[in-house]
Amino acid sequence: MKEILTHVCYNIAMSKKLVIGNWKMNPATLDEAKGIASKVRSAASRLDHTEVIACPPFVYIASTGSTGAQSVSAQEGGAHTGEVSARMLADLGVEYVIVGHSEERHAGDTDEIVSKKLASVIDAGMTAVVCVGEKLREESGSHFEYIKKQMKASLDGVPSEKAKKIVLAYEPIWAIGAREAMQPDQVCEMAIFVKKIFSDIFGLDAGRKVRVLYGGAVNAGNAAAIMAVGKVDGLLVGRESVNVPGFVELLKEADAIR
Ligand code: PGA
Image (cartoon, rainbow, N blue to C red; front, top):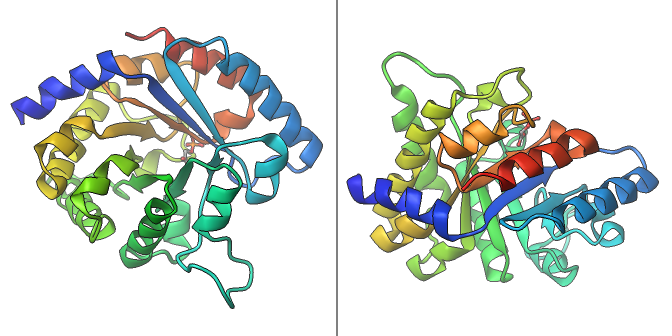
């Protein structure tokens, strides 16, 4: 555990932070999408220490030149109406794909489906942003066991040499869409915990290197504390990622943290 803690701090100091915007099913028109993307791109170009990835709905990816996607099919191709494969996304220039978001898990994605999606993202040469998080917190600390099981089942079958193609997004479900984010000191505890589980699965070196993001009610007002005290490598931002003034401010706050 001590080794992991040392390297949580090491990661923060050494590598660029990663802020991913999950636009969800927003905005309503392509024109608006292009406007958001270009303003965010210009703000991102002024940052020195932060990589910014937008994940718009599939239909906006190409025309906004985005390099992130919110989802992917578990299937490779063929008779799957309405689905979009990992290969198609990679072909569009996508580099990061969110898998296992709680809204998709809620709609039916099991750990098995998440692990299939993860495998197809990695096979297509992209990085998977794997979301994990508990539904609720109890005094007993049952959320630790819940997340451990969720991680083991979702990451099942990924060969160790591919662990570097995974980013972990810790998102407590009760904080997603909520008014308040998790307290930064609790974020820190969970960041260390998920790194520890990751290293149990893939080895200490992979555990040291994996980037951990926090998601759930992040905004310009809490981003700095979550990054600094929470000691995460970045943020997964929902609502605020399509609110341009708020998101630009959030990026500046995140970029200023050392
Ligand atoms: P939120 O969503 O920032 O709107 O709480 C986060 C997410 O769903 O990833």
